Length: 249
Image (cartoon, rainbow, N blue to C red; front, side, top):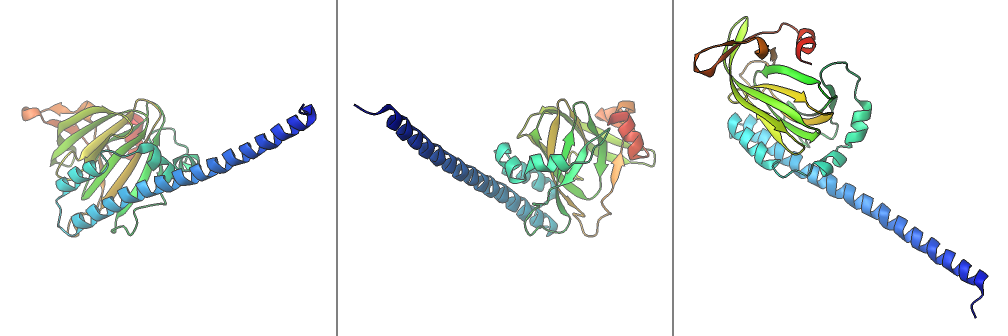
């Protein structure tokens, strides 16, 4: 007959051994997951780097860059990507803002990036927005990592001192894993509104054309636009970021 005290001690020893084995497997699994996540992110960022280099060298048009970036990130695993860039840690360091987005540069940026290539995280509280704006001589991709966004884009048709004529091109609601892109040639004006607490990952390249204008930002007011023929809107310019955030942020 088995002694009860010995039986309990044997059971506890076996349980402790099993617990240590599970803990070891858990640590290995976490390390493996982290490695897989970083490799997934590295592959995406290397592809973004290569497309940026082709664009900079004139081997790729800006609209082709947009299409190819959308293809590269079409099946992105947002959970892996978030782990690879240590998203929660980044968000913990994000500056507090009352309007608009809290912006953090991603230090694990594009490896061996071409000049002007940047990776950023934009964090939004529910109801906050990146006000409608355009850029000169720049391309960018905006990927939803968390939350849901209403995203509107416009082609930029004509600039004037007090307004920009635009044509609406896109009005969609995006969920994690979905994205949009901009260039001077297509969907240049963009406007993201967070319908829940959310995070965007931006990959952007400034100064695309060496002989082109300096990369700048133009804020507009589409809600106060005048309708023109052929589906155009004449949107007044907004003079400052403060005014744009007060109205749209």
